[in-house]
Length: 252
Ligand code: BGC
Image 1 (cartoon, rainbow, N blue to C red):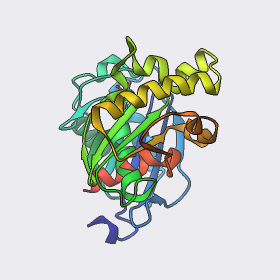
Image 2 (image 1 turned 180 degrees about the horizontal axis):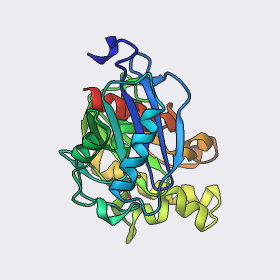
Image 3 (image 1 turned 30 degrees about the vertical axis):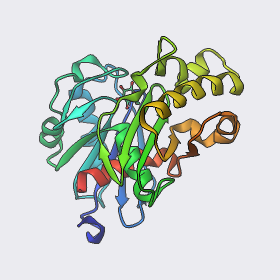
């Protein structure tokens, strides 16, 4: 098991998003980076081939990582193949990303949905550590990502950001990008988030919600304003969750 891997065999996580690509070597014993992460802009257009080139360059700068590589993608991933691309180039749809990246990098690469990776990390090391029952981890960013984790086991590709709430696709109204572009107050945004999380409560009766994404740093401004039955807490790993979760996924 990777937690006893020698430092040179450590896994690496790569977080591929619409604006940036971030990479770090991960120590799975503690669920943290071994050194500062690297970051570069996502190429435009963000085609699979262009992104693979960036990965090769980034991995070359992480000399202490020779283990498996986990990659997060903001879309549905089944058996290494990407099946949706709401916020990335359309040519990802149908791409066997596991095979492409493994060929390009010469490493053992495993691709996972971005929110699923964050969910795995929060349950193993973060805000939902040790929690039994159903935990729903949501990431509020450009879109809304979701991870369903039951007794520590991930049910992948839940895509709950695309649920219809009050006649709208949830992420178009309640993602952090909607708050920014519509210049919503915390109170206005909290109202939309309440409607969203209440829908999730009705459908799933979870034990706990964890709220991730960059905006979770400002959880004090909006989480206390939500009116829910279920406990809701900010993510603990913040922007490290995707990379750590991807490395974990690649290893297990
Ligand atoms: C995508 C999901 C992704 C989420 C967060 C949604 O638009 O469909 O796959 O997890 O955005 O990036």
